[in-house]
Image (cartoon, rainbow, N blue to C red):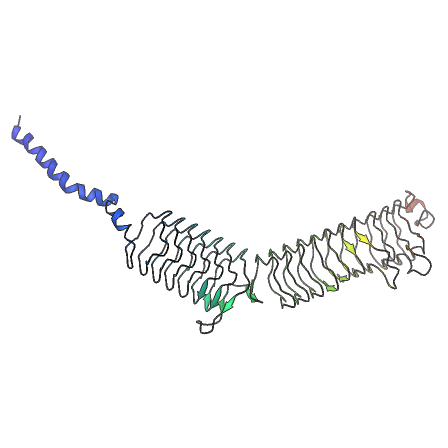
Length: 447
């Protein structure tokens, strides 16, 4: 056996250990605790684990925090001027009134962080995750937010000027009360496609405009699809041709608003549209108006197919020429209205397969309306007042093909409904018989 060789092995091992140990320690980040606890200007804090760290009021100007984890860290009033935070993680961090002027946060993750009152002027946040971030009152002058994800962020009261949001995702963004500064690089905003600044609100698809004051605003042809306009004030707004599809409008005030030709497909109203409003020619397919006050609203020639008008309050509503096929009007409240004129005007309207059962429709105008397949059972079509009151419903020229008038009253305490030149075909008469068995009419069978 070569003992000399064996004796040499430990020495070799020791030498190897002495050679390899520093490399292993360095790879494991043995120097990290010292480096990652040095909080000073120009400090190298890259890839440090600073989760929950209290760095409030520290001066970290020009510090390198690339790739560091600052989740839930306290950075209140921290100086991060010209700091590098590329790809850093700051989720749920508190940066209230922090100064990040000219800082680089490209690709950083700040979801649910608080930056209220923070200074982000000239900072780079391109491609940054800013979901549900609180940016209220922050300084965004000449800030680069191109392609940033701002879903659910709050920008109310922010200071803007030359702020670049091109390509940013602004769905469900809350805004309002912006402050504007002169001297920014370009206009106040560079906004994504389909977005506008209206009355200090960011208006666009999916915008959070709950309770917004947009009275008299020009919203014509704007995209407000899926926007939240609950309790918003749109009194006198000019919104012809605007897209409100799937928008939330519960409790919104639309008095005197011009909404002609607007698209309200599957929009949710469930509130007040009181006083004259113009929805002539509007596209309202599948919209929901449950419980809304529609008094004096004009829906002339509007597309109201499959619309939900249940339990609405209607006083002098204009549905003339409107498409109401498969619309549901059950439970609607139409007052007697002995004043001159008709309560509701359905002249030449398409009410094919519409549900009007149990409705109280005195003085309504159905001349030349198409009621094919409509359910008008248990309805009241006669006038509700004395002889001085306006006549009962006008049904002259209406099409009653397969219409259901079971137990419907064509007379009232005043004058009866007016019939003439009607099409009676397979119509269910008030007494339950079929018009085809009654001489192709229901005149002698309750009508």
